[in-house]
Image (cartoon, rainbow, N blue to C red; front, side, top):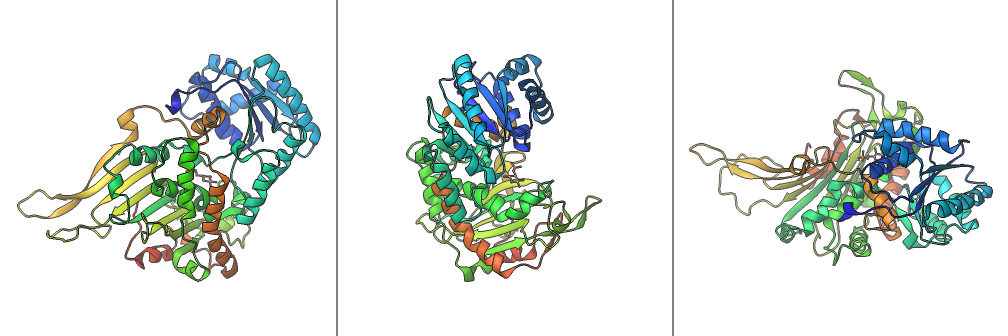
Length: 496
Ligand code: BG6
């Protein structure tokens, strides 16, 4: 069982320990692991950033972060006191090789005082431009290979196209082998994304239907109601296609569409995901217009308040051509899925926050009832990732009365009420996995490359043709062209 496991004796080194990700996600996740008594006595965290701080000052800052960002875990002073004693700090510039010598000394000290056996997980929570310099710095002080195990966690973006993803990987590989590199995609750590595997491969009744004979099409939606939230300068370099579809949504699609793996071992599962991603049909330049839609929100009034357009957000270029919405039709060229459209969409400033997968099945071959079925078709399986995680199966039922008319009804499973237990955050799951050495939910370089191969042709065409932005108002479901993309194939986006 994944959650009966414990973090072994080791050190976790966080580069960028003073940054947003460390404060909002990593420290609260580690604190929760401490709260659940999943940390070994010898576990230690070494935070690294430029600001000069003593261990005590670092602990105080991290306490503030844990109090502020631990959403569903009470602050227990005794748990904190013990955990805080495992936090250490090293100040330095990642471009200065002296930092890595200092870090080496600190790690030796920790190894002796806390019996970590030389086991170290390095976590890159910095600007992407610092990934290669940190890896090289670690290499220069022989910290990449040493006593005990050494691993490296890398946050996205993994490059901004296929070529830059390959370059980054080569740079990391000069110090770390592929099996040491853990590329994080936090969607794979979400309980409900993991539950897709349980749903598909733990049950016998769905798999026979899971193919082109019964599935009409699949819709994967990740809608956000927020805008760029102070991340304007990062986001305008990325856009929805690279920020969400390239990684999170293609990983979700791979989990939905992959073949059953022979076992639940990391490479067995990852080989199947990778194979699926490599089976995605590359979109030819002259097909991009029909199969991909870019959007950018303009100013509007939402819920009685004025909301700025994307180009008016802080840090965003007023002429920006970045997509804050992207929708793509992918096809998978294999026997299971040939001809089945997979529609993926993601956007900011949509009407609500919702992530779901809707699998629409073919209609009954003959309509013998005078049904008032709606045009989304009778049989729909919805896997809701967030919020209110759950699964619903929609089918037609007889409407009470003397006539024989049908109406869609749904059978619902709700994660929260069925289990009544708290779900761990994605970062708790993924950190624990990396510390244990379980890479099942981490992305491999071959998957990163396959995903770039799928989205790069779209990026290239969009860069050349430009856009008439803004093309949707903040608070609406994206540009009209996105609806037209589905209507062309006789389909319609679900309103989640
Ligand atoms: C991140 C993206 O990876 O995922 C953000 O960079 C996005 O732009 C976020 O807001 C969404 O994650 P979640 O877990 O809130 O769905």
